[in-house]
Image (cartoon, rainbow, N blue to C red; front, side, top):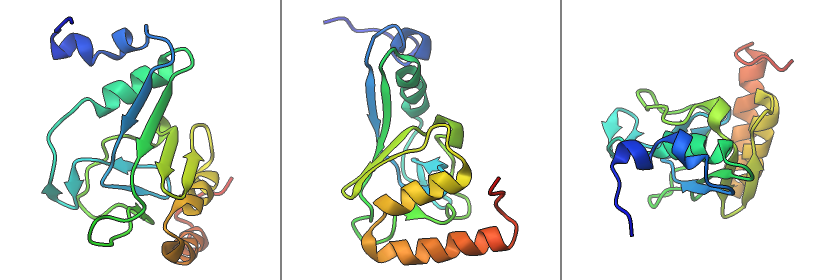
Length: 151
C-alpha cells in the first residue's frame, strides 16, 4: 500500500495515466442543463471541498475512463434531485461541460457533447416519474421565454 499526498492522488494528470478509470461521485442536485451541485442545499453548505472535479476530469481523460454522477431521483425527504434550476445560492461543483454520465434508479443519461435541449430530455427520462411532467413544463416555459437557446 502506498500513501501519497492529496496533491498527487487527486491530480487529474496522474489519474488519467490509469486506463479505464471509473470515477463515481454523488450530488445534492443537478439542473436540466447539467450543472451539478454537490456541496450545498441552496446557501447551506453540507459538504467540504473534495476531489470531485479532479476525479471527474481524470476519468474523462483516462483511456476508456467513465466519469459518473450517481444520485437517487429524490432525496430522503422526497425532494426532487433533478431540478429545472439549482436552488438560489447552490454551488456548481461540476460544470456542464464536465458532466458525462448521470445515473439514477431510473436509468443513465449521457450528457457529454449534447446540446442543452438534448441534456434536458436525457435528464427528464431518469428523473422520478412523478417529477417528469413538471420538468417538461418548466423546460418548455424556459425555452418559450427565450432563456434557453435550442439551436
